[in-house]
Each structure stands twice: as structure tokens, then as C-alpha cells.
Length: 432
Ligand SMILES: [Zn+2]
Image 1 (cartoon, protein in one colour):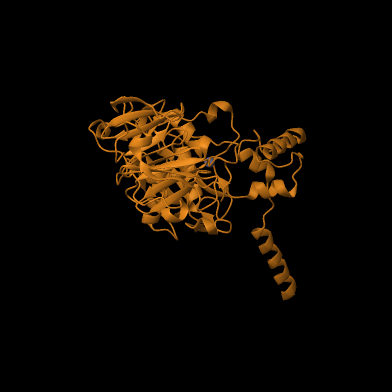
Image 2 (spheres, rainbow, N blue to C red):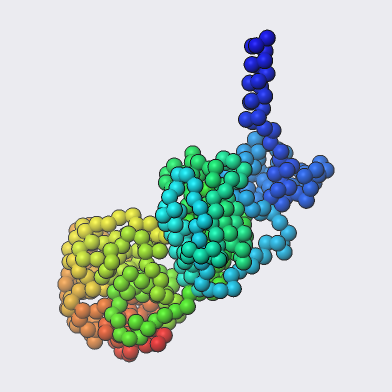
């Protein structure tokens, strides 16, 4: 008798541990159904829509892959809502505040703050929006850890402006280590995603976006599509160019799609030959660089920063860019000396030009290693007439002109003829 009772007890326990999954309720909760008790056709259509936005085969039946997806870790906000409800508000002020109300195991407040601040940096890079921490209970965004649906499935929820409050599910098996994110829940994804809602972004159907409703260990930071949306909502960061207009020397120009003018640990963006925005902290995009860099250039989708006797190479596949190597200049670039003043890459000739003091060096990347240095310390004056020694920065512009900067003077040279086309104050470039 006791054995039978025990058996029944175990059955009940198991049933409680594995409740039947209610797909209709799930589709209703996330906005794929208007009712939790739909007719057959409506239910099938809703399943198909769910499968379609989750890039699953659209079978219209509750197959295993579909149920698995429904049970997977995700944000608690519905994604499939009428168009009018998708239009979120935005903050009216360009400076908003946040407060961490509480944290839960295993976190310390400083850890949550660090992840949150890192996420803020990426979200607001080049956006006219400042977010800072406050102790005040009147903070715009208040961060809570609360019980939601227990472990798994819903990881967090956030309100649009001008509420903005964020709720993390305190019952998740959280981790701050993305390499453990398959088994535990990586907090960075949830923080970046919910902050996106707090700033006014709805869900997207793009898997490459941090605003896709489902948890991912692949997309763990806002991508360019996300920050672009935010920039459209709030506008570009307002520029402060005073130190450049006052004559501060520049360190380098990095020739990305929108060239970056680097000064110390900050940069400004350049578009159509004029400074557009900045200063922006460069560690947001290029984490791992030293305080002072000497020169920078791009080769394909990789950027190179030179500092003293080292070069730092970044991969530009995803933001923030990834530091993939740090080596001696003498190892990567034949006999190019350390402490370079400025450098640029000419893709058409597969040649990197380095400038140092009164000399310049040219390195053809197509040639075999050891034979790449086609110009080894020639006088700048002999091949680049009119260009001073000790230049601060150099870059190749779209129209085959080479721009040199020294002491707030901009020198334009024709790349092919090497004729000095103009010498003028950089106030036009600096937008002074
Ligand atoms: Zn969400």
C-alpha cells in the first residue's frame, strides 16, 4: 500500500515539475493571438506567424522545435502587437538618470553597475543622450530584481519611456561570464536588451539585433542597426570641438567609413571633410588601447593603431571592435621603426605609408615578408614637397588626396602627382 502511495506521490511530483505547456496562452501573452481560446484556423495562423519570426519551418503545427522555442529564454515584453503599440515614446530630456534599487544573488551592486555602464556606453555612442547613475528615488530608470516566472523563460522586462523601469528575474541562474551563457543566463544580454526598451526601442524580428526577443550568446551588445535606430530617435551627439579649435595637437586619423580624428582617449567623427560629432571615448569602440597612440590606419576591415614600438590590430566585424593582436611593429612591418608620427594605407597600391620625423617609409603588403619595405627612411621633403617634418596625423581622402595635419594646419597633397594642393588652417575641417 505504501509503495502504491509513494508511486502516486512521485507521479504528482513529476506532473508538478513538468506542467503541460500551454502554447495558446503563450501565443496570447506575446501578442500572436487576441484570445487564449482561438479557433483552429486562427491558432494555426498564429503558430505560423510565430515560426516565421523565429526563422523556424512554417509548418503551422506545434512541432518540437516550435515548443522548444516557446520555452526558450526571452524578454517578457510581447513582440507581436498592433503597429500603434510598437511606436514607443522617447525621453524628452537628453540627460537621464538610473538607480539600482536592488540586486540579487550572485551579484554585487558594483558588478551590475559595471555591466550596465558598459551597455550604456555602447547604446549612447555618438547619440545625443547621456545616462548617469543617481541615488535619488526620482531616477528616470529604476532597476529592480524581482521574482517573475521562476528560472528560465522570462528573464526580464522593461517599460518604455517615460517610465523606463527595468525588472530582472531574480530566480535566473545568472552569470557575468558570457562563456557560461549557454547553461547559465548571461546578464550582459538581458541588461543591454532591457535598456534598449527603457530608451524606447521595441522588439525587432532581426536575429542580429540585441532587440530580438529571444536570449542569445551570439549577439550580446547593441549592433550597428540598433544604435542607428537610437541615433535616429535622439539625434547625433552634440559636438564640442573647442580643444581642437584652440589648437590641440591630434594623434591620428583612422580612415573608417566616417573617418575618426583621435586625440588622447577620445575621438571625433568626420563626414564630408568636416567634423560631425565628438568627443567620444575611444574605448567604447576600441577597448584595450594604451592612453596615447601615435598613428592609425585601416587595411580592409581591420584597423591598426601604433603606439611606441607596438601595433594593435582590431577586427571590425562587430561593435565594440575586437582587439585581435598586439605585436611589435618590427615583427609586423619589416624594418619600420618604432614611434611613428602618422600613417595611412593606399589600397590601390597595397601600400602603407609611415611618417617619422623627417623620414618616410612605404611598405607593400603584397610582397613577401622581409621584402615589403619599398621605401626605407627617405626624406619626406624629397617625395612630399611642402610637407613639414614631425607631422601629427595623415589620411587618404576619398578623392585621392592625402591630408596631413601639423600645428592645426591642414596640408592637401595629390596622391598621384604628390603636388601640394593647399595649405590652410584646419578650422574648416574642425568646424570652428
Ligand atoms: Zn524585450
